[in-house]
Image 1 (cartoon, rainbow, N blue to C red):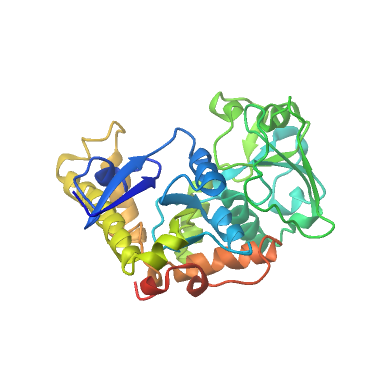
Image 2: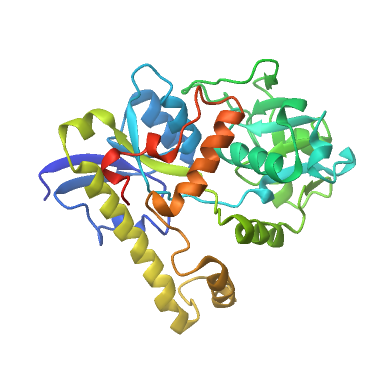
Length: 333
């Protein structure tokens, strides 16, 4: 047993599974692991109640806490959730929206909060690549397939003059998109109407995979959604704790990577997805063997891009860089 007991919360990804099953451990730490079926529940429990010592946290949720008078958390450069985001923009087929600039002047939904991680990335990419200006839209914030109370456990800044409104308690964005009550939707998750094959809703980029592959080929950016944070007071009490946690998360991710590399011999038979080996081999020339990198240097361009988007979209008080948001002892990673 370790000499320090810590509570750790994360979704159970491939990259964290070895920590949950204890085939990888944190040196000198007796860690108890927690998860939730909805990742944002982990965020709220960490931010609102400080329920865990170490937790996965969306990058925007963490970055917003840095503007508090006494920032409670510090991040380590571990990114368990990464998703390309051209695919997360949905439009009503009758809206006439066929390209990013067509979104301007329209009513657009966003899940949970204005500037959710996926939304920050999607708006930023559309601005950089297509000249899209999110300030020219009307934004409606609410639940995806069922009504929710918009996230209020972090600050909710927005630029002056931006039209941001919240759905009433009996409405949800997915059905409104399908009915044409809103023109478009930015969402981290796929709305039910799309999963059910509704003919009324399409993606802004219907054939998104080659678009996302080209984006990565040109920029080297695989968008990071979430990081791991720990309570700042613990870091002050335990020099070296951030390094120990980083090493453990890295070892768990490397164990998952090694399994994929080893399973090439058996055609990725441990997965239920047919032709997984072909997809894996297709990805390697583009993404390399370490396609989910941790550490500051390998992710500096990605994180600095996110922080630039965050500031430009009015969600940070000042322009931050990677050196500002990660534990100082890990800036050499």
